[in-house]
Image 1 (cartoon, helix red, strand yellow):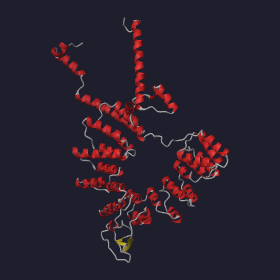
Image 2 (tube, one colour):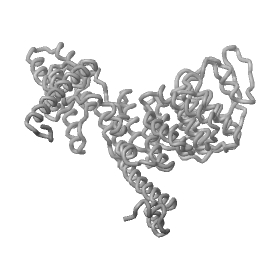
Image 3 (cartoon, helix red, strand yellow):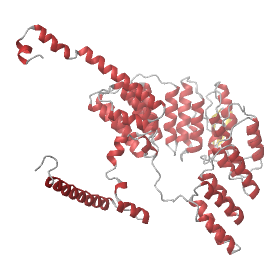
Image 4 (cartoon, one colour):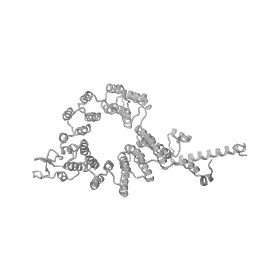
Length: 550
């Protein structure tokens, strides 16, 4: 046993003994690195299984001294999920520890803003605040961070910010690549009024700079042609070509521009394209860039292989059945995916084309496996009793479970035809398999019951309808981002335990809800009664001489 006197005034051996009990700086650093590697492996295992909530809970409860690499790993996964609030909460914790964020962390934060689909205004506000903080702190983002900035502002609807970021990249000497132009095209799509004109100008500027486009570039152009307009100024279209040549015609409302096969062709020829009015529909806007054939020829000229997304966009330009099927037969079926066939089937069924059977045959010949979305589209075609039973038998053979959307579609088709027996069969099937129905199906069932020819039919439908579960239209759906929140947040958010109150359970059974003030008063009364019981039990124990009190 070493005494204090030996420690301070004793021999040097005692001081050496005590100094051995204290960790040296290099040993302490080695111990911290060991635990950091353990935390990283655990976080990577959880994130590999897509358990973001468990990873965030582990970060808050177990990681005591996180470094920048741990923040980078966690924020990368949260950015992909789009949980903006959780990402910036962790970012505030990072700044509180006086850790400077790197480009990977800033990129993940902007990805969290871009992937947020539930609260776009909040995501846009956070992206703007983060960009202002970058300017104030004097951080110099990398090109990848600028691309994530442009993606966040484009998806959340700020087109002007994308062009400002493009100018800032040029001013700071970053390389302008095809990825930069693709993100700038996403910003053009955000402007629904003149986004198509901006997209064409961006593409022509890219071609003049000798930058080869890729499949993503053409996909963004087709999206702009379908979703965005051209504005109200007809002269703006003519300014897209440098060598535009005005000509005089009998009709003064017709303007002639010199171009090649489309507005994208920078190799000008002596062909004339007349633009009398501003294009209003997506088909007219697509014709300005050459139409489906012109797009495919431009892609072959730049040696770009069309993807299934490109073909899905081009499907919407065809209205004639013969031209549509001719276009589908000319495609390479090895490139097509199930999403393309789903869009083709929906277009044929909604437009009431006679080529639905041929499309299904082509889909089977290409060995394309049907998914649940395919059966949801095919449910719109099932009308008769035999078709419905064959459809249900086919979907059960593929081992798919009929969901609410498919069953509601079948019920709607039958209710519009006022077939009481088939409707009773579907409702009994819903009761047997515990399938819900939406509000649209219920409205059509109510119309069918009102128009029933015999009271017994309405009675039979009503008997099964009482056992079927429905989805209320005013029901608040559970947020997608709530599943990614850590348990620490969920515990802090729950002020009261609803299972501990018997009065609340009775109110829930009666169909009434208690307000927050009523809940607070209720739990306060229960707390006071519990404290009274504790005091009484303590007084009894004192009287009996328990707990060392006499």
